[in-house]
Amino acid sequence: MKRTSSWRPRRSIESLLFSVMAMAALAIASTSAQAQAPGKDKLEVTAHDSYGEYAVPVTSPGNAPNQWFYLVELTNDYSLDQTFPIDFHLADVNGLSAAINVSFNPVGSLMDAGATVEGADAFGISDGGTESKYIHVTAAGLQEGTYSLNIQISATPSSKVQLSHNTIHILVVVTGNCASLTSFLTDNEFTTIVTETVVNVNQGRRDPEPKVVSTNPFGQLSYNVLFVNGCGSDETVSFGIALDSRFETNPKNNPGNAVFTYLIGETVAPDEFDIQAFGAGNGAGQNLWFSDVTVPAGHSFLITVHIQIIKGQGLSSLPLTSVEPPSGIFDGFSAQLYAPGTTIQSASLGTGILAPLVRPNPSESDLPFTVQ
Image (cartoon, rainbow, N blue to C red; front, side):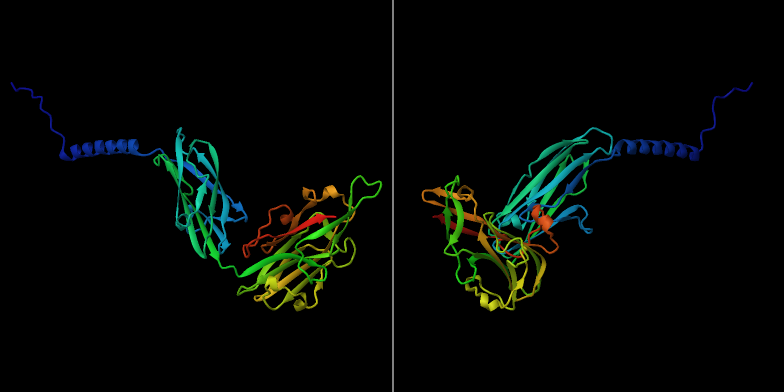
């Protein structure tokens, strides 16, 4: 009798290898699935136009899409004082609850020049949250040259978040002061620089208070604005002129010319002002706004505004700083130089962009007075 054997043919080597490979593939797939990150949340960083003495537009260059970029142009020995608004929003991309910390690190040659950065404080933010920062940058006594400030933005833990922009790049260019804006008061005939005046008042029997009659020794004055273009190229700018509220143009509210403009082919020193050198002026009515005036290189542009004190206003309307004897300062005369394209509407709303060509801007004139 034959014995029955329990032996069975073993698997082929090929079959065994296939099984091992299949099991290995499953193990690798499982390990990869466990190791793969679920995706990072996104911290959206949005910069806006900066503000301060100037409105500086922000850009995101195509060659550096992860940076926000500002170009601030100043003149020699000017102090930077600018605020940069930055918004943050943490978008929940992976569907997992997360909270991160955001910090800032300002570096660059502007910091080496003594700049200070305020408002760049670290903060925490959670999914769906928003935060706004107003980064205030100041620097004094900057010399001619180019300065950079990189405000680096970090978010931790980095394994949970990615940033849309990780750097705020601020480039400050300080150029030589090749142009000037000056304003000053003279008599109506331009013979005397007026640095003070007497306000004559009179009180009638029925007047509750004394009323203004005139100024003395000059009953009529001229507020003069002089722009000197000593640069190597033509400059196009806009002018906005403000009178002290106690004065008015003369004439006023009629077709006559209270304002005249002049252009001369040389650079005029304000302390050597001579109206005769400017020749005949062009009448401009009672206009106190001039848009997009092109002043050639090496030329000077002059605006004269004939004015007088408003008669009949009460003594109490004057800006008195002393009662005995009555005296004060008319401090509302100013001239501002705006960038080309600025409209009188934007200037009146305070949104006009001042031209960085001159310092100081605006140019202001004070007129001390005593009352008699």
